[in-house]
Amino acid sequence: MEMCSDEAVKYMWEGAIPLQIHLHESEVTTLPPPSPILLSSINSPELRWGPDKFPKETPLVFYREGKPIDPPLGIFDGLKVVLESMASYTDREVPKQTLKLWRTQSPRHFYGGEWDHNGSCLFDEPPKDNELDSWFDPRNRGVNKEAREVNTLIQSALIGTDIQLFNLTYLSEFRADAHPAIWLGKKDVVAIWGQNCMHWCLPGLPDTWVDILVARIMHYFQQGKHRKN
Image (tube, rainbow, N blue to C red):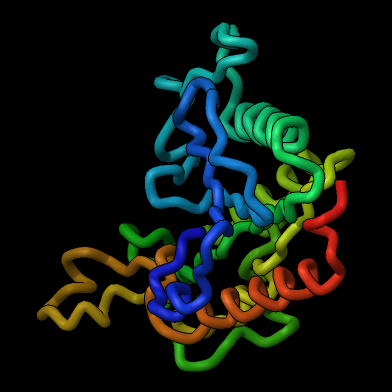
């Protein structure tokens, strides 16, 4: 579970071991001991995939059953293969009584360009309901489209499994300022480093994520499903 807020630490207890499968590993060979809760996501900093990181000239190589896929897949076709493999493996290997949650993407909030091309995420007011699609809908080809694109692949990969979708994207799209680098407090920091709203380290929204997660977990335990075979 990728969160910077200290609030996340308050909700830890013995025996609840979140699992995050790293996509850059060619094979997943082990799982932690049986646990009542499993939470997965693909928002870790080292796992930011995109055409800018892996252009067609130097594509990322994907594997199926231990062998490289040739010709190389495009970034989203490859991600689809990986997500389906992860979901299938998790559904097959993790005990049925385990609560399996897959968190959707946390969206970026850039306006006017990418973080290193004059994009800004320094806003005072949350986007209005009728503004969300103009910012985030893939059909508009904006810089914030990837969260919804990846979520579509995640939803498809979970079909037929007992992994529950933990959708925090829509809620998060209403965030006003996200994580502007200006809060680092250094002179000319935005001019030098641009702005970064992927980490969500500012208080508020990540704490809400944790509250929702805890409510889901408590409901699961109250139903007694963790005791069923």
